[in-house]
Image (cartoon, rainbow, N blue to C red; front, side, top):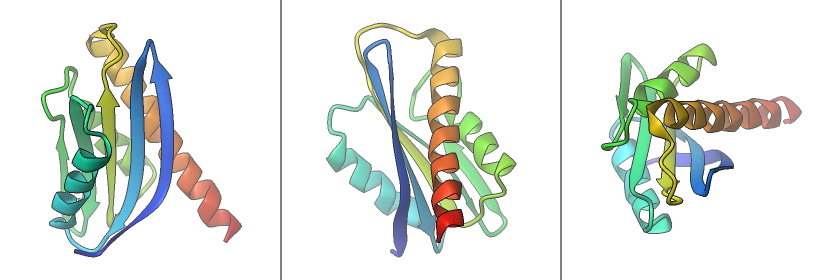
Length: 125
């Protein structure tokens, strides 16, 4: 397992908290380790959705969340030409249902934010 966190962003929407982390990875199997870490850090999170692009593999998981947010995270990564990365978003439910469109909007916003933060930081180095 060799992965390194490169960016973190938090988004609050109607009481729900979305924690997006971007990691550089060596292999697709690093997702298992990233997921385990998120399970420990965000114990109250109902969903840990992700997208991974590594080599010729693109994969995503929505972890039971409505609206297919894993696919949306994969689109965010694809638009930014990120390879050898996993974008993991953990959501802690805030008591107000956002509906599929609201969930997708939130995941897109937090995913885009964490990638933009990474790109901005990378340019400074």
